[in-house]
Structure formats: C-alpha cells, structure tokens
Image 1 (tube, rainbow, N blue to C red):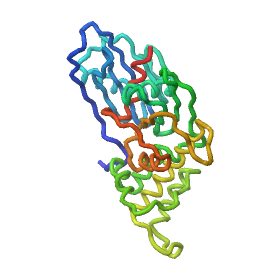
Image 2: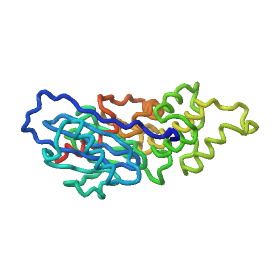
Image 3: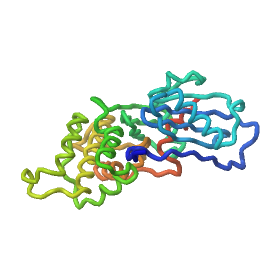
Image 4: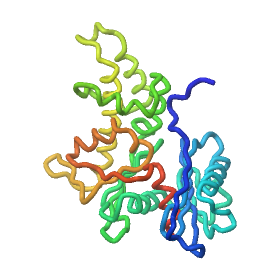
Length: 293
C-alpha cells in the first residue's frame, strides 16, 4: 500500500473520571469534516473519551465509526447517551443525530472547554475553511469571519502538497522552521497555481541566483497559508496603523493548529502567543457539539 503522506494518524482514547456519578447525563458530539471526523463523549462536565478518524468518501459511515470508537474508548453504552449532536460539513447527512449545530458555535464552546474561559478569539483552521471567531466574556459569539475564494491556502492545500512533496504532514511544519529566513510566500489564489509555483522552486535555477533549500520551500508554502489566515483574523476588528488587534487570549483549533509551521508564523506576525491545552485541537468542534444544549 502506498504511503499516504497527507493523513494525520487516527486516534481514540478514554479518560478516568473518578468524580463522575453514574447518574450523570452523557452526551456525544460528532464533527463530520471534509477530511477528518471526530467524536467526543461528555459526562458530568468532563471528557470521557474521543475518537479522530479519516472521513473518506462516506460521511454517514465516518460518523458511525467515530461514534462507536469514542463510546468504546469511554466505556459508555450507546443506550446511556441522552443526545447526539452533529456539526461540520457533513452534519446534515447523519440520520442518528438528535440535532445539528453550526461549526462556529461548536468551536467557540469547545475552545472554552479546552483552553479556559480567558479565550476571546478562536481561529479554527480546517481542511476547507478558516473561521475566526470573537467571543464575549460571557461565553457567546460576538463576531466571526470565514475565508473567501476556495480551499487554497487551507488544510486541504497542505495535504495535497505533502503528498506531492513526499513529506509527512506531521513533519512539514517542524521542518519549515529550519529555514534561516522565510522566503516570499507562494500563491494562494488557486491550488493549481500554488502547486505549480512550489514545484518551480525545485528547479529552473537560471531564474534564481540561489536555489532555495527544502526547508525554505516548505516555509514558503506554510508562510502563504499563515498570511491568508491572518487576513481572515484581521477582518474581525478594525485595523490600527496596519496592526491587527487581538482582544484577549487566542486559541487555535482544527488540523492546522497541529502544524507549528503555521501557528508560529501567525503568532510572530500578530505579536501574540496562543494558548496551549492538553487535548488535540481537532476535537474542539466535537466537544463543543456535545456541550451545547
């Protein structure tokens, strides 16, 4: 079987929650994304278990598999679940859902659970979209912005590049930070343009006085993604002399939040350090879905 460089490893885990009562209400959130699907089991205000798998071509099958894996990891029977809430791109396809909720509110709620109540700005960086969310102090969404154009410059763009360049998605971010300086970012207008420009960096030395290193090529790709995300964040609030203002603490969620080549460049350009948490940032949507009434 050919190695699939673009895929994050699938995972599931359960947690010992000794203070939880057997009578606690148990809810499940399922986040059906374009490239990955997560499920989270919540009981007594605690995360009991989760799963994170690849979505594939069948949203229904992915949601069912993620649900069963999370329940098995948490030791909860399906009959003991009071509600199953779905969110994400494929949420309307899931017949077993008690209800569906939009991704904006789910990621906002999940980020507060994962990173703390001080979170005021949440940036969800997924396979197809980037969502910049501003929160009130009292745990409500104040404003949000989404990326325009297509998925170029988002998670799917990085997945395609990893397969083309034969570098694992778990490694490209760290390797890009080995570059001595960030080169000019590649195009984010069209995925085909971005890939063509990236491959052009490997050859045609007559057009460049010095051939870039592999780390610099990765840096050019990820710097471009970071700049596009910064543009989405910048539309949340007015600009003061060209600077983007971040109100309160910043939290990253979604698959790109696991890529230091993206997150550190955003932090550098904004002059802020994002919060860190103990949970996989890809779980935010599912956790938020399980927590919302």
